[in-house]
Amino acid sequence: MTETTPAIGSQHQVKVSVQIPPQHSDFASQRRAWIEAEKIGVDVIFNWDHFYPLSGDPAGLHFECWTSLASMAEVTERAQIGALVTCNSYRNPNLLADMARTVDHISDGRLVLGIGSGWAERDYENYGYEFGTAASRLRDLDRDLPIIRDRFEKLNPGPVNGHIPILIGGGGEKVTLRIVAEHADTWHVFGDPETASHKASVLNDWCARVGRDPNEIERSIGVNADNLGVTEDFVTRGFTHFTIGIGAPDFDMGPIRELVQWRDSRAKS
Image (tube, one colour):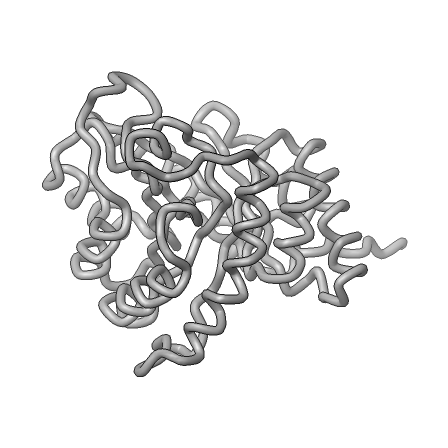
């Protein structure tokens, strides 16, 4: 019988996460959703880093990311927490590192620093940030990640576990995936299995070029309630972290329960 070589990244434990955007609900409802998601058994609870809703009523209710994460850290006990993803442009990198370290301590070491270069022009314009170009925002991210990591080393106290895992979102093949190869513990992307697999192969090439073992990087994929059946296909391609978003006002936990049950059943097989 011919042995099949495991896909790069497949050595990581299969995980299920939920993104609960801080939009279109009051804060108490969001808090209840975080608590319920943790009870169901998700591995990570994410919010996002925007200043306005990304769907529905553009003038709808919305709350800030990092102050929300501090609250999430207090009301949860087991799941990791983080933003999917923090916009690098919105905060000085040294300040962001200090904020992340502080939330890491509030959560007793459960923070994941999800970060990306940013894209929501409305946020930039209304909050007085220079929007620049996609290329300039990526250059800023490339510049700032070493500053963030250096600040982690200087802070007293430092991160709870000595290290805050960094998740980088994006699939740009010329720059973003090189930054992922250099800095990320987890890489998050969207797309069908074929597209994601192609992006993963590009990431592997970048890892070879920068001298990084690609197996060190967890591969995370966004899934929707209507395509949960493709999860095993993604696993065969090396993706082991699955994130689904739920929104207000219903906060439908059904797809999350389905994903958690799938995760648990395959762990027993």
